[in-house]
Image 1 (cartoon, helix red, strand yellow):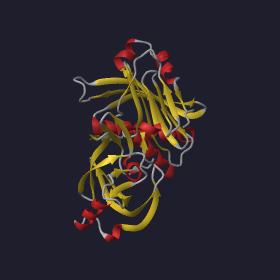
Image 2 (tube, rainbow, N blue to C red):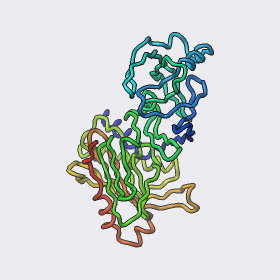
Image 3 (cartoon, rainbow, N blue to C red):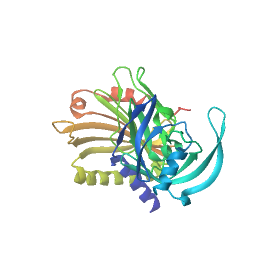
Image 4 (tube, rainbow, N blue to C red):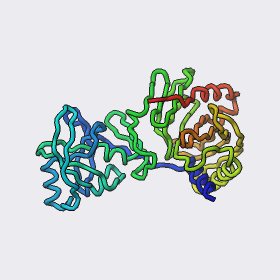
Amino acid sequence: MRKIFALLVLAVSIHSLYAQTIIQMVEDKGVYKIPCEINGLKVKMVFDTGAATVSLSQSLAEMMLDNNYISISDFNGKSKSLTADGRIIDHTELILHTIKVGDITINDVMAVVINSQNTPLLLGQTAIQKLGMLSIKGDKLYIKGNSDNSLGGAINTHFEKWDAHHYIYSNYTYGFGWTLPKDYEWERVEGTEKHTVFRAEGKPFSVFVNIRVSDDINDLWKVYNQYTSLIEKLDMSYEKETGTLVYEREFEKCNLLGQHAIKTTFKEYFKDCRFKEPMETYAEEYIVIHNNFLFNIAVKIPKEFYDSFDCSEEISKVFKGFRYSVKH
């Protein structure tokens, strides 16, 4: 029963949609600040991935204490820390009950008060790691996920790389990469599903990788019948909820880079606000467990294109670029 429940959770992730949060950052003297709320107090914090903790100045902490944004019971005592330029400084530790960034609220964030009146307000790793998967494009911060991010936080600008010239993607957090064929012009785009780690489009192809924790399942072949049956049931419930029709779905056991996997092909009919007319697509996906994560690796093309051309060789060429051998 436990495995069946775990399978249901994993299968639901294929269809789960997420609400992406986009934060407009403000440049101030060469650094980016983002609007936040600390225990309800509206502030602008320096987005600093190199800072270990959230940092407050003494003057700000005193103001918050005087106006009941924090209390004496929130403080944990004094300690010392080493700065980037080699100085040892004193600080006071405290717990911030909530920090709100956009529509995301994270709880019980460890912070420090630097014994200086002019210390900048820093959004450091004690908060960043709780936000979810982050990426920066220009002056905008994109957040995927929420404070209940079981995979842990990761800053995409550090733990992944997209080579837009050679169409090579590398993800150091999950240890996978994808080299896309140069026959097409690929553009990395934002994912449309909750656990999308990588998505790119090179007309007429779309590719993506969804990842989540695999719980206690380590071989999909051992639960092949239960897993495929659950996906088919989810297709029907998904149609009732969204109007998206998944049809002609087929499954087969296969191997992906030496590991047991499930290959599924299907056609999909859906209405999307981005398009004037309903869209139909053909999809090939590989589902595999690697390093305790469930990978969903997919290629989609418009059904009209699929019906007009023999795409099997081209699809195979796209999949051949996927690899696990990425190390930090």
